[in-house]
Image (spheres, rainbow, N blue to C red):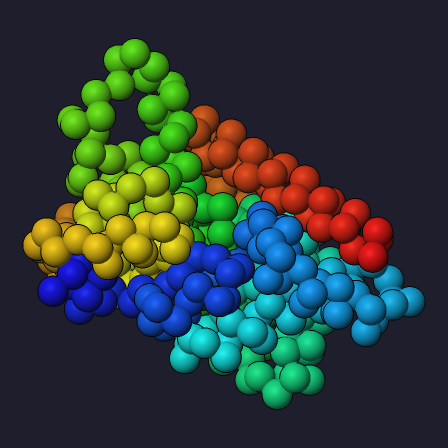
Length: 315
C-alpha cells in the first residue's frame, strides 16, 4: 500500500492546486485554490483558453466581478473531478474589511449557485485576520461555509473555533520556513523533523484543543514542504497537499503510523481559552512568527491578485 493510500485511511486528502487536469490521478475528496495557484494555472497553455473565454463572455463587467467569474470557472471545473468541496478565495486585498469580505463571499456563492452548485460544495476562503474571522462568523450563520486561511497562531485557531467556522487551514510549511530562517546556522533539520517540526507542532496543538473541547471546526493542515510533515500529521481531519507531494506519497510504500488521535486529545490536560478582539490582537502581536507570516501572506496573495487583474485587463 503506497503512502497516499495509507494516509487516506486516517485523513481526508485534499488537492492544493488550480490545475484541475492533474486531479483525477490522486482521487482527492476536495480541492483548494488561492490567487497564486490560479495565476500559475492561467499562465499554462492548457488553461489559458479558459481565462480568455471567461473574460470574453463577461466583457464590460467591473474588473473585480470578472476576476470572481474566473475563480468560479476554475472551481466549477474542479468540482467536475472531485466529489466533495472546492475552496475559492476572497480577494486578499479585502482582508481587513469585514463588510466587503461578506459581500464578495455572497457574490462567489451566488455565481456557484447560478451554475447549479449547492453551497454545501463550496468553502469561501478568507484570511484569518480579526475582520476575516468575524466576516466568516456572519457567513456561517447564513449557511455559507468558510475556510480560514493564512493561519499561523493558536489565537487565530481559538477565534475561528469560537466563530463557528467550518474549516481552518493552518500553514505548516510557512511556520517551518520562519523558524528555520530564524535559527540560521543553528537549525538542526533532523532534530526538528516529524513531530518536532514547528509547523507540525502548531497543527497538533490546534487539533488537540479542538477535540478536547468538542469544537466542530475542521482542521486542515496546509502548505507542506516535505512528505515527513504530512505523515507526521496523519489522523488530522484533512490535509491539503500539492500535486508534487501527492505524487511522492503515491510513489512510496514506506509504512507510517497514525500520528493524531481524537480520543487521546480528549484526555489531554488542556485549558479552555476565550478571546475578545483586544485579547486576540495582543496574542497575535506577541507571536512574531504569526504576525510576520500573516502580513507576508496577505501581501503575496494581493500581489498575485494584482497580476491576475493585469492579465484580464490585457484580454
